[in-house]
Amino acid sequence: MADGEFAPLAPATTTVGGHLASLTRPMSRLCPVRIFLLLAPFLYVAYALITPPFQNFDENQHLYRAWQLGTGQLVGERRGHQSGGELPPGLGQATLREIGSVVPQGPREIHRRPLSEMFAANTPIGGGAPPLYYDFYGAVVYSPAGYLPQIAAVGIGEAAGLSVEWTMRIGRLFNVALCILLVLWAIKLLPYGRWPMAIVALSPPMAAGAASFGQDALVNGAGLLLTALGLRIAAEGRWTGARAAATAVAGVAIALAKFVYLPLVALAAFPLPRSTRRRSWLLPPVAIGAVAAALMIGWMRIAAPAIVPTIRPWVPPVPEQVAWVLAHPLDFAVLVGRTYLVELPTAWAGLYAFGDSTVPVIWSAAVPGTAALLAAMAYGDAGAADLTRGRRLWMLLIFAAVALLVATVMFVALATRNSLIILGIQPRYFLPALPLAAIALMRRGEVGPPVMTRIAILLVLASHAAALGAILATFYTL
Image 1: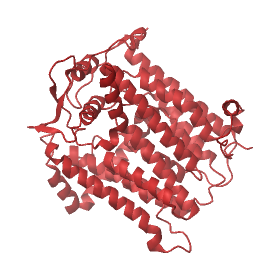
Image 2: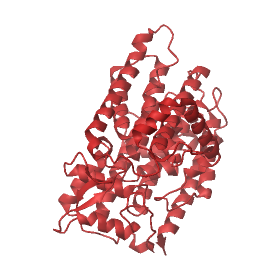
Image 3: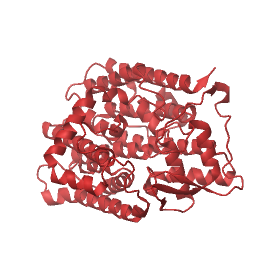
Image 4: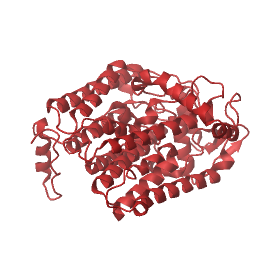
């Protein structure tokens, strides 16, 4: 069988020994599903355990919010220009020990320790002391939908008397399991483009995001699943009840966590299949998008009392920012275009920064990681007959809609109207939609030589070796 031609997975009755034997076959006979299932658990878990607690993006804020939700407090408490809640004192003590500050989005210290003491820090959760008020305005408005694995970890940690650090690690491992299941489902559903999606899913940025205590595991995994569902529905030319329900659940979850990715639910909408009534075909994505948006707006109304009007004094209030965008669409479009033109040349490398702004771009990981994705795209897919120019254009328009929403949110939150560019846009924000763009731009028709996929996998592994090596060198000594 040629590399990239996807034989079906073994049936459920296959023995464990037979399944293990299939994973040891020559690489040319392995499909992307099996490659992902073989490598992802080891790679994802490595980032979850090697990266010290609180050293992923905004991880202290996510811990506080998950803990708040785990104690039944759905809405945060606002005190002046702070917004958060009262939580056990051990959370702050563990944060200070690791990164030196509990200030949201403040500077982060690097606390290096011997490699043999990787798990030495164990801070009691409460110790009978009264709770303290924590400010975590950046996460306090998030809904419970993005924190279900973390809430379960908090419950286990408190019930078992675990330390703050080990409670975080359990939450990370739960997130790893969730992300792997969602991505595995997505790759199996895809009618074409499995290699590009598998390479993105196996990349260091994806593994590090899944291995954090935040919402990236859900958001990234759901983004890939929505991509796969949309392309599968479009390829088959029909909506089934099961796939409509799966799209609805994933769409609602992603809207409640990070609504900028909601356009992904419209992937199957256009181009319209032949001999299909427009109204009946567009009803499912329109209804799903409307319900998801309504639930997101409803949650924001519930969480409104906890929202701080303005975090940065030089940024106008949110209503004024939104009003300016609506009143000056051309000026705003120019600002967004200028931002991406300036940022695009280096944005691809920014995916390979790790920690919480503590491990800068690792070029030795960025170059092979990016090359691996390009190799998978160049390999193509012989089964992509449905990937017409019209569908490619629609896929890229959805990716552009996500990029526009990301820029809009960052403008509203951080930028002034006379800004040259919109600051604060991080490349990791595009991971949930990256496979969509990669599949839209991949080679169609006769596939390339099988060696290209083998090279892509080796490049991914080299990228991980560089990334994990840099993380170890940053946080540990021999």
